[in-house]
Structure formats: structure tokens, C-alpha cells
Length: 170
Image 1 (cartoon, rainbow, N blue to C red):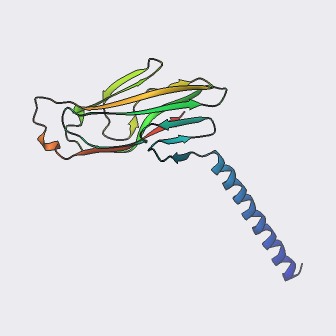
Image 2: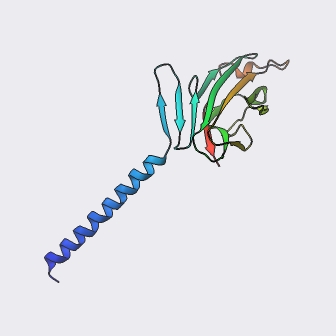
Image 3: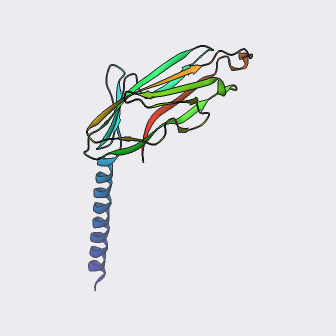
């Protein structure tokens, strides 16, 4: 084998390898999540089967004072014919509050699901493991409240909570 034909074989193998990697990358990108924001502040996140549409965006970012309550609403749609298992999670969570146990949440859906608790201090699931049947849409409301207590809450003045609501498929 001459030096020129060895070089041609190596170039052919490298070119084929690059082509295969490019095809895998394109295929993987097709199945990953996509986020679309519309002009009215709505956003939707989804895979080929499960998608979430947020009425006022998927970002939580609030400076709150004792007694404040705010809500986030979103719909989760299963476009497939099979049931999907998932959890509702807050990712990239920053909770600056010292009295974090005074911040509570209630997560409800239009099928009767309800979970209440202390809003997390770090990234964790807000829901139990849930199942959404095929070709079904479920509407959720997440209500976050900063409880007004008899204890001095002044150390938390100017503190914020922030994070991103995320649907984690199981």
C-alpha cells in the first residue's frame, strides 16, 4: 500500500466518522425539548409526546412580603396514545429566605390532584409521581404564599425566590 492510498483511506474513514456523528446529533436534537415563547408571555415546552404550556411563563422570580400570594398556571398535554409518568419540579431554584418554612405552596390540577407543603429551599419535586393518559390535557395551578406569622420576619426583607418550573418525565 502506498503512502497516498493510506492517506486516502484515513481521510475517507474520518469523513465517514464525522458524517455519522453529525447524523446522530441531528437525530438527538429532534427528540430533545424545545421552548417556544409567544408575544403575550406564554411559553410552551415539550418533547415529541409530552408538552407544557405556561400561561405566564415557566419562570418564578418574585420579591415577596408576608401575606403575598401568587400563582403560576400551566397545562400539560400528552399527544401520544400511551400514558406518561412525570413529576413537576422547580429547577435552578434560588430561595434566599432565612424563614423559608414560611413560604408554602399548593399544587392542584383539574382532575382533583392536590399537594401542599413548604416551598423547597433547593431543587426538588413539587409533585408526587403523576400519570397522564394518552391524548389527554391536564391544567395545573401552583399557588405560592409567604405566610404572615407572629414571628419577626424582617430579616427576610428584600429577599427573592426564583426558579423554573420543569416537567420531568419518568
